[in-house]
Image 1 (cartoon, one colour):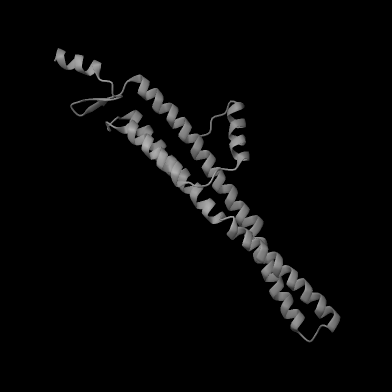
Image 2 (image 1 turned 180 degrees about the horizontal axis):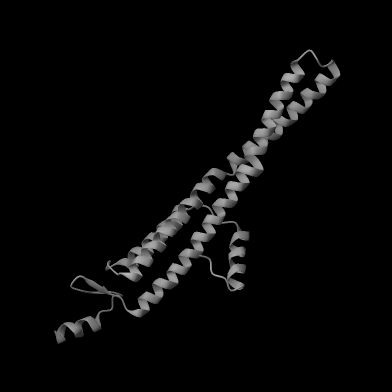
Length: 186
């Protein structure tokens, strides 16, 4: 048994397995807590980015474009009716054309900026970071994976590579201000 204890003291890996129980040194637990804090930061930033792009797409572009399309449709029926004289018909037709152009421009902006892709990529990254945070919490409470730290690093890099869009700078700055004021994001 003494020989087994000497071997365990000389292991350079972050974990040792004795029968079915995994023992993690305090240094590794502290590192997992630090990584969990960093993952929580990334999860918050990506979730806020997803919310920002969703609001931008929905409330500032999609809904106004939809309303302009609706208004131009109603006005085009009014312009085509016989109840309106020639000069008013020309003016209404001009408004219909302008509404159509503005609506098309807004929809083109949504498409060209790939806002739905931004929303989904950031939301997916936030969800994946949350899953890693949960895994770390379980691993700290009850270690059961020998190569957890290496797998954690691999999964973190996979998440970073899967989200091809950067979070807006103002969201990163907002998180820095939260930390500067002594608050922790949960």
